[in-house]
Image (cartoon, rainbow, N blue to C red; front, side):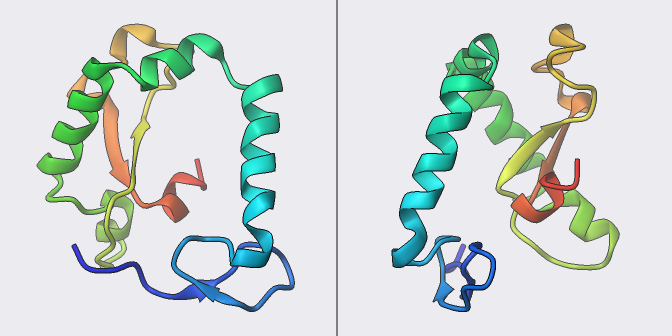
Length: 115
């Protein structure tokens, strides 16, 4: 795929254009936010699962089946690259479906944030 499009920084009120989500001035906010979430809120078992070779293979297969596109965007008639794979039935409630292809939905970051 090509380069990511330019968009405004995710920091409210900042109008700098970036391809990475946060401008150079606000990149530290991203790492701080993730560090705090990882330390205090992230499920350690789920974190290990998402680093596993089995997940990486299932994730790649799900994205490949959708031709690399976000399925929610396609439903709206928009073409957008999939960046995430969403568990339709949540992993914490249905660990038995963690790698089940029918439970995996490729999405762009924006659509994944709606779930």
